[in-house]
Image 1 (cartoon, protein in one colour):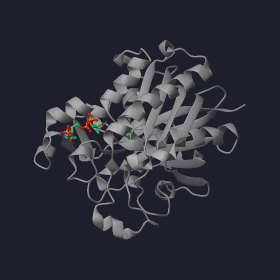
Image 2 (cartoon, protein in one colour; image 1 turned 90 degrees about the vertical axis):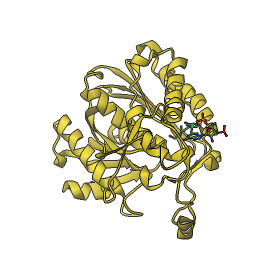
Image 3 (cartoon, helix red, strand yellow; image 1 turned 120 degrees about the vertical axis):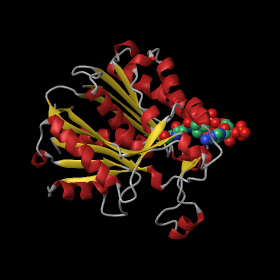
Image 4 (cartoon, helix red, strand yellow; image 1 turned 90 degrees about the horizontal axis):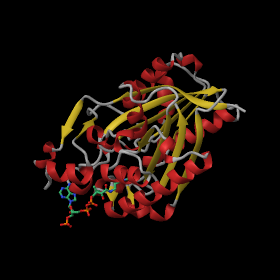
Length: 322
Ligand code: UT7
């Protein structure tokens, strides 16, 4: 039986930082409201000519360097993104070309804010079944391109960035289990109405932006994340107290705190980056992981619980021995 294990992590954040105060001149909001309701203080915004693959590539190079793995060793690239550079080819193919390698499979996974967990689930299955042995798993997003900058209820919530891991075959886990779910009945709660087959004309009518019923999403996220955390722990025979670090999707500090409280985990065992990065969708978990690995909080042997919730609705979790 093969297992998979995280060999290295990497991240990239664009240079430009937007503070909450910067929104006060644009929409009817305040630094105080954003901090209190979301925990967000600032976010990074991509430069005009910067794309998702630019950020994905930077994060991937750092992960490869930390893992001590050469790009020739990679045999699969999976990019989780809902903001690809192009309709096609996939961002994963673009990253592959820009790394200067070819031949092996590369594809994108589209599961909104749960995208990284979905990609990790797929990568883990590839490794366990012998289909791959060294996978670059990337979450990368340029949400600034689908933000309605006139809508105060969404524009303050998101940021851009990328995170990556190198997932390698190992004799012991590593990834102990992954769990992914979806409930497509909630399409209207969180969506970007414009799409290729829905017609490009929608793009001209502000339909190419995020539409969210924030309250509905909030309530669903809190309930579902608790259920999936319990599912994950129980399948592995693990108690909440055994978790060294909860590394959740970073959408709202209140959602994160509620998840930790329900598990009886103190906040000093939760990695929080939403204050610095805002919601970077599928990039948020690998970004948070990389921050905590590089600042020394996450150590080899630690037990990590990842959990995420997003449009679809989609949600997922993973228990990982780092
Ligand atoms: O990552 C994918 C999943 N996404 C999420 O998990 C996001 C989940 N949702 C949330 O995080 C929260 O629901 C929000 C942060 C989006 C909103 O917080 P809330 O506490 O649920 O506020 P609300 O939507 O109930 O709005 C409360 C009030 C409203 O005013 P009225 O109707 O009470 O007069 C809003 O219009 O706050 C108003 N409001 C704002 N005020 C100042 C909404 N956005 C803003 C704003 N600044 N930016």
